[in-house]
Length: 493
Ligand code: TYD
Ligand code: MG
Image 1 (cartoon, rainbow, N blue to C red):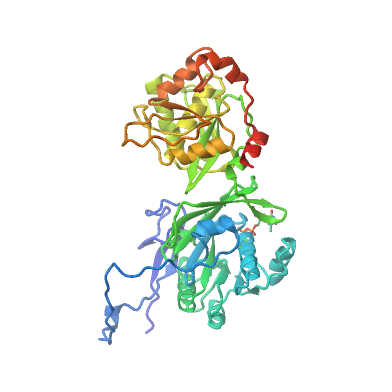
Image 2 (image 1 turned 60 degrees about the horizontal axis):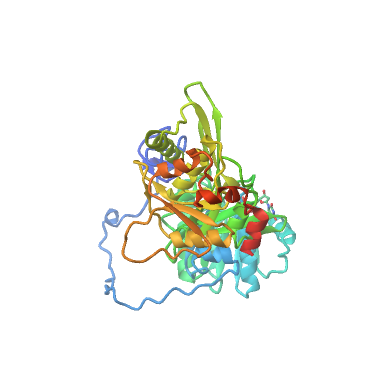
């Protein structure tokens, strides 16, 4: 009698396994992501009941030689930065992102660049026919690159062909959700297929010594397994983000066994594919207009890189009693906290106004250091008074309204000066050792200890809002030329 196949329920978002179906995954909270799949039959050691011969593993101490892994730079600097210097032989990289964001484009460009550097690159597309990839390459002017291209989804065939590719530097699998292993009894894109195919590819990469990049689409409906299912299996996880309405894209490293995480690479999507943006601040501030109430420039940090962005706030009266809070690019919980602190500690009321907060350009900020800039934008909107257009803001706000220190103040200040700003509003230094803040000489620092210090600048009639300049300079400060896009760009250059 044949054994009844065993089924289990798997979340397509996070890969959690449950014994019964549920509308919402208890592990990641995603709705409608759980589906039934045949259980993988793992040959457990105990299950076999056979005492097999084993080899002893060798233990060693911590103080051994640890040479940095060799790397193959792709020649695309923004990508290499996120990878930690280039591709590590034998490593597996997951590139996740929404469909249509540009994953295939950046990988085609990286593959071509690597091939032009004389490395062997194999690009296996499971989504597009060879003709389609060729067409894209032609459009991007990459047709001359000596890379090897194939359209395939049968993983047995792929692994078999890769056996002979021992000298390859990079193998691209676009995408892992289209790959299919015949011994797994479920459709491509299911958790078991995605896991099994990745396992085989990663094993091939480790034994053959090439780097493998797996493309993984992020899916909202859970119909196919998302990249999160694979995050623990690979050495590095990169996410390609961006808003399709904006042309810039951010490559964000969220895990990297061979380098720093939280690095970002910034690209601009145009006619000729993705171009690198070596100075993102100039890009994010390009369309900023000074002297508008509700706008403040945040001196942020993305990985090791300072990035200046504009925070915009709009308030609209809403007497209904249930005002709206709408946030793009920042955490809505954090906005609620800031509004509560401003109301309770500083007496600025938002209870009859809708609050719309936007990080201009489509960047997503997760740093608490943005608190002070968001507060400045909110207070500026509330008092209908622009912030000093030459000033940047950074600092974390605590629940009692105190402004707390944040990391890397110097790097933020340096970037601000580089882009033509003349002052900065930042947390008051507390005596911590004797090291003074190495601020650029051209920058006026306005250190504040409490959010009410910020509010006072706007509330005081005639004061240059948010400005660190003494009142006697008020008029000139107000009329001062603003470092708008052209100036910011010029300063950056
Ligand atoms: P693609 O790399 O196919 O996205 P993914 O692999 O993540 O699904 O990118 C597709 C989008 O990029 C598509 O909407 C068109 C746009 N695009 C450009 O704007 N310029 C270009 O040169 C290329 C190749 C694509
Ligand atoms: Mg694609």
